[in-house]
Length: 300
Image 1 (cartoon, helix red, strand yellow):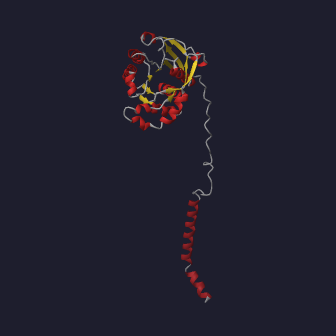
Image 2 (tube, helix red, strand yellow):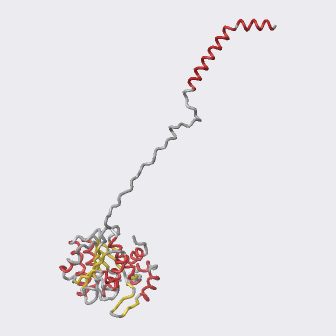
Image 3 (cartoon, one colour):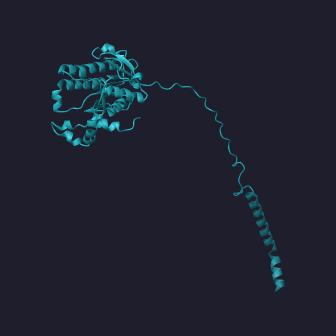
């Protein structure tokens, strides 16, 4: 049996030899090709090369002067509202000038020393030229009472002259402190309200994109009359707290405007200065509720 197997192997040896030779050659080729392929577990030293960070030279410091402060002209800056407007503007770093018939304010307070005072009369427009030099914005707090003709002249004509002069000088923004409507009271103070509305019309015409009209009602705060200080907030502040939430009552015919809430002089001054110095403050008319709303917002 063993002899038979031996003879079979010998008879197939040529085929077996050929098969072994082919297998040997194929293995050689496969081995040679595999040697050309990178080992996937072998980390290339080329990929490990990290570029050095860019060397950034220190920037040269350039001495650039700070932007010039805005110059604000307050008309009637020695009055109750005007003095508070001046103080608010100074606190915000604004350069403040003021034009008044009496010139410098008579109050002996530190803020008054930081205001550029001009003496002039708005009924004589020529006296405005020097005061308007270099001015970016104007806030008019000019107003008064008296006979109908005098009230129209002070509240209307004087402010109209200021608006026209400011427009001619290229002033960008103009804020006018007007007054809220009080219904029946308007007829009792006809010259006052007719003058206010005439000035408002002129402002909206000359400053369609930079004119702001504030219409507060009763303005409370500490008001100086000579050497006496009147604490108007004692009455005004409680009424403001109550009536600012009673807006629907102001819509009642005839008597509704009497429910217009008072507003503090600080709030009026804050909104007036913001309206004069903020280029994106919306132009137009702002009633007492709008004044209260803007005064509660953080200034920019």
